[in-house]
Image (tube, rainbow, N blue to C red; front, side, top):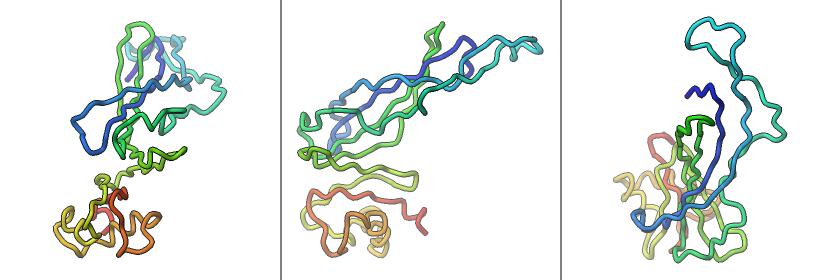
Length: 183
């Protein structure tokens, strides 16, 4: 997306309950990001597409969009687990034209703690799953993969949370990986 007139970057967060994807969504303001480049007119116009160029800004800090909003009141939600995504928006400084991209989903659970627990999906993950009473890794594998034989993919992806594959607990959040990516 070329913007010869310059641009600015901003971000915000979308937060909603994990159990009700169609439920209400909360938008939390994020901030702006200092850009690495700024537009400058080209010295010699060689073709219509080269009427400008970008030169490097002297950026004080590396621009980073935090995974989660800072100082957010997680306890203000009724849900036990929340889905959080960040939305990055690029805006033209003259025309106001914008384009936005939504980031990966982060799951936040144990909202009553001072620092809630966070689980990040990676490209080889399918989704998050909250364990229910009577669940086992074998039953969850059948639900997602059609076979209990793939339970070890769930165990491997959640090895930081599962110490014994025979002991998972209701309310525990597990990341379900894409089995094809692990084979």
